[in-house]
Length: 101
Image 1: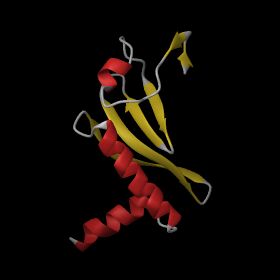
Image 2: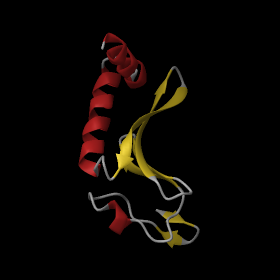
Image 3: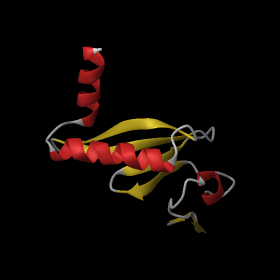
């Protein structure tokens, strides 16, 4: 992937801090199948799963890096994909689970 003439590596390991160039480039970095690592202007990193419901894009936050590793984020994104295959919205499903508690 190329941003501003610089090559930015695709996410391939749990060593995100080594894979991303310094200074950090603000934006969202795809890992594949809807999983993204988002980097803010403060340098904070977090994971989200991107999908569509009724033609509208949605993002489900999966947690902050490094608390949530790449492997954990991939597992969470996989669970979201399984929910989508069942016709469920991962955000709405999480809210329903929270309401039951």
